[in-house]
Image 1 (tube, helix red, strand yellow):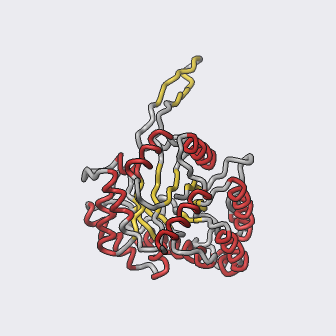
Image 2 (cartoon, one colour):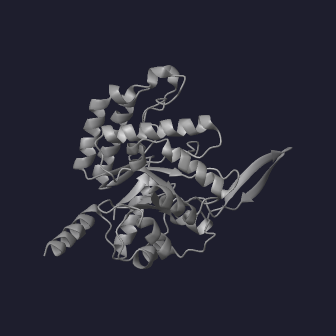
Image 3 (cartoon, one colour):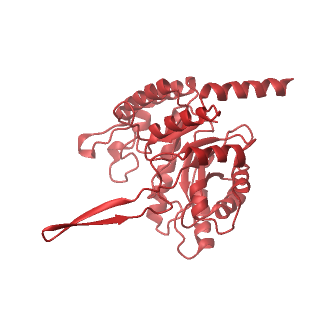
Length: 330
């Protein structure tokens, strides 16, 4: 399987991932793509073949009141094609995950319209890069105002507002508070949308008591043949935090215990090994790691797995798939 991480690069002293300047400075997609080449340099050097790009590559490109930013995809088409070609040469799986403010099932028509604009932009970027069907855009269901059924109905209506290309790119993820796996599987039943299973979210929010193996198989079954599914994996934070505040002339200290849903800095290697050997045995999918230490967490986990007899390097994956192809041909 591929192992990936999300957005920030902490190695090499930290790397920029996009043009983060305010609108007054004239930011542009071209600068973001230049920064992405630096990221790809790092991924190639570290032998990492899966990465979640920021959803802010094209700054202000969907802002309704800033039309000067609306044509960035066309203006940078050649640069997008170049970056996409390089990603394909590296066999690099790319994706994006727009923020929690992109809500396809909002009760507010303006927010729904903004979510559709953002989905279409992400789709245009991926299409301009020439990325295949494994390059997906992840969204949560959103809010549950009026109850779960009403929220799912609104999401389905939002789905209907998307282009066919955007629907092909979209995957929906179970969340840690509201919409569990059964809810997103219902959306798959209604629309055919693919499902990304988040194991930590499932452990936080599983009202239907679905066992991990069954949950994983259900989510993987929503992906079409020939397209490798992906899941999200993280370890719950266990470290407490010290808070200080000044009270008169003295400093008062308190300790804050972590919530179960908070992500740890790194991945628990023992739990991950158990997941691979038991829950995931015999199944084919990729894993997006969601850890605060980002690429450093991925590299450490890969080394720890190798010490325990599990080779997760891209070379091992390619050799395994080549052997499977030969067996099938025979």
